[in-house]
Length: 324
Image 1 (cartoon, helix red, strand yellow):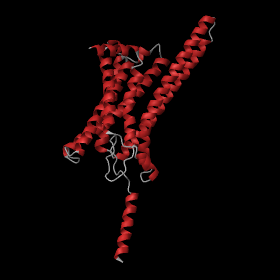
Image 2 (tube, one colour; image 1 turned 120 degrees about the vertical axis):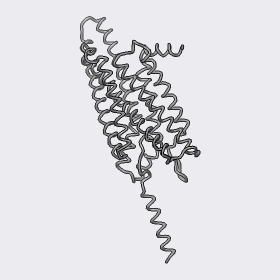
Image 3 (cartoon, helix red, strand yellow; image 1 turned 60 degrees about the vertical axis):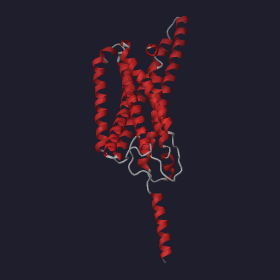
Image 4 (cartoon, helix red, strand yellow; image 1 turned 30 degrees about the vertical axis):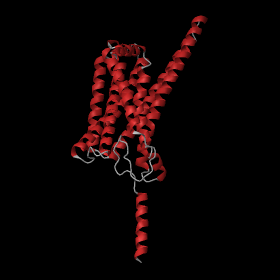
């Protein structure tokens, strides 16, 4: 009968809706839009996005100004740190501007499918991809710089000259800018996600290897120093070694803990999108997308605290800047 056919059609439509993936085309680094008549899960208030963006912007901009203004900080290590802060500043500005556009679109001040809005949206996506790639590259450059400092201490200034440092920075910014532009413009979302996941895993593996290797070498050298004769000297050096080892362990724990906690959930989100887009259990994790983005943005707040605020020279420069 007609009623049976109609009810059967309704059941089929409901099943199709249940099987339909929540996101057809994933735009990287954007908060998923609110769905009408749905239960909000894992949604983050917009003011929190702005607060994280403003704090990270202020911190990283302060680091950039401090490194540029203080000649004592014009060294390879601080140049890479300044590059990291600059990429974080770009990410904070872009994400804050994107949230503002989303608010204007929700109140009807902007068209979501307009030509100029779409072009500006692609530009912001490119800048976000560039900033995230640049952050990882800068983080990797800092790890390599520390590796050279420990393993080639006598030849460090011959290896890491300012000219080579400038060339590395130009290469990082050029590669990140061109890659981000081409990925957003010409690549499909699935290909972009694969590239970012592979890039994240490879970079994390290299960084972990470098820091663990450096820590092991530091322990070996510290044991050799501790085994030297002379009781007072031996005891004093042993105490300094334990203090240095504990500080190094704490720093490494903070570095890797912050890196994994802030970046890991987002890249796991990308893996889940690729691996099980229709699984209801995966959908529960994907509903926390906004929280993952906040964690990703908060890494820009933690970076200056780890790399910059622990440095005495930078703290002096910060005090001078604040007195202005």
